[in-house]
Image (cartoon, each protein chain N blue to C red):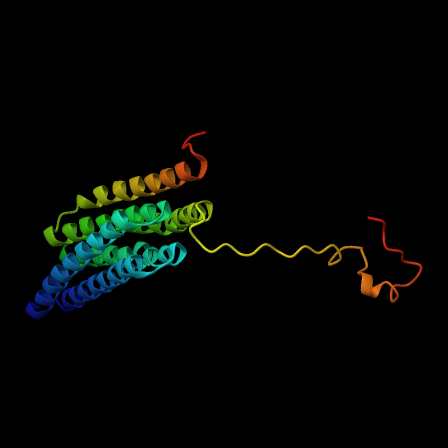
Length: 95
Length: 133
């Protein structure tokens, strides 16, 4: 039991570090992205990584309430991605 | 007790799988050199990476206390919306000409029409005349 718990703690820390690193790397792509599509993609990836970080926080603290936060961020991220893409495509979001 | 140990191991494995896919997606987003290939990599983060993390969260809630399956909602929502947003971003790339567009198709008046090509006029039976276009 002790070894399994230790392994899970180490995996939790490793996952935190790796997803924070992935978030920083997609932020680099957001800054230097040559076209608009790359910037939209980087923002979408950052939203997905933020969902992952919040889920990890929920696992680490053993709190159930972060589920609703990540669900709302998932919905908001999808809608904002579609809104950005639609603004580039049509010049207008709601026609 | 053994179920708890197996569950803890499963949580650790799912966390590491999710972290690996998130890292692969971020590296692909950073290092590919075309907009369309860059679009390909981070879609794996949205499905497999976050799916593994949510699976870890579910298994953890089952091992710690009374389990909850709420995370299936987030997982199904992400699985449904990931292709739609990827399709929108691909349309943005095509709209902005940020990718290789296929060459213009060659112009041809005879293929799959009733017009008989010039070289085959003699072979065509005299009863079937090519329509005057």
